[in-house]
Image (cartoon, rainbow, N blue to C red):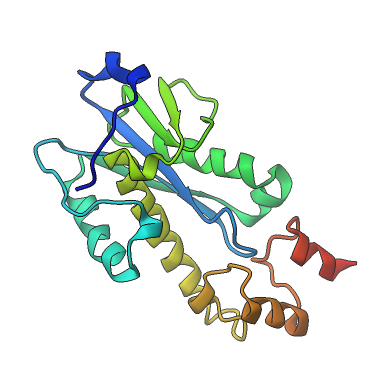
Length: 202
């Protein structure tokens, strides 16, 4: 369990019962949707070894994925499509995915901690926390759900779009992915608004 630091500006919310953490995965890839998750943890069932999903191994994330779903008071996973990313831009699509995730919770939160430096436009009391996934347990849990869910989603597309190596790089702009794009061209799941993909349409 990471050391959780409660920002001083949030001290007045210490007695609130239903606190959600929300985070997204997939802002940087050239392909695939952006996925967000929201989690309300159960203080009576603390989850060991939570941490920023980027600092955990794939094996650790996969092991925590079902545990979080089983022990959380509520969780929700949502996404914004490639089409929404291209029409809105990746920031707004990420905020939209986070909004959908929080609104999908079976128990609506009294307070939402959002990883990053801005919150979606919604009716919830919320606070953006930079590097929140390493500071707030609920955000760490959300980061794991979002990351693993997105990985599973894009791995499932590997057989539909062979030759791109999606199962390995998850859509990120690796050399192998860039080489495949140049030789095979973009697919419907590639983000046409992203520079490396947009260049192929000129």
